[in-house]
Length: 196
Image 1 (tube, rainbow, N blue to C red):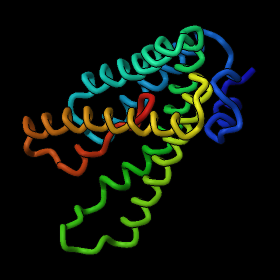
Image 2: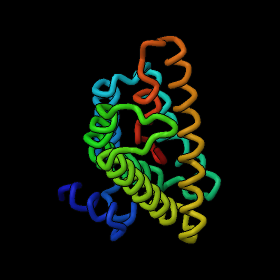
Image 3: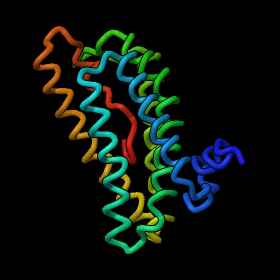
């Protein structure tokens, strides 16, 4: 069975992580593909410290589900949960990439200026994808943890905020070390892991 169809149905909220095959090999393949996509993302956008970002992303991708599933006594669901999170993150990373490339090619918006229509459109598209990604991750956690929809969505949002803060801190440190680097491009987070 092809894994693409269940992944697309997962991001359309028609399936849950329990509908993916229970396969360590599939999970490792999806995690590897996600890390490769993140490496491509960081290289194309010239995001500093790609190795550190990938290690942090991997730690969060594996750490959050392990901790949460352990606390809820649902650890046997770890393999399918990580497959769902990494597979959906892979699809969203590939969707974010062209938008991030277009956004990084745009001139910086001055504080008192009005964004161009193209910049507004890109901003709305990125926000739409981010909101959709958070809904999918909430959906995955809802099924994996047997939680109601709203608390699972709040969990996905909280994990995103924590990860965003960690990645922003790393980007700020890298920009301080490389002042010639564009602050706009450095601020674009890699949309990976379970909640980025």
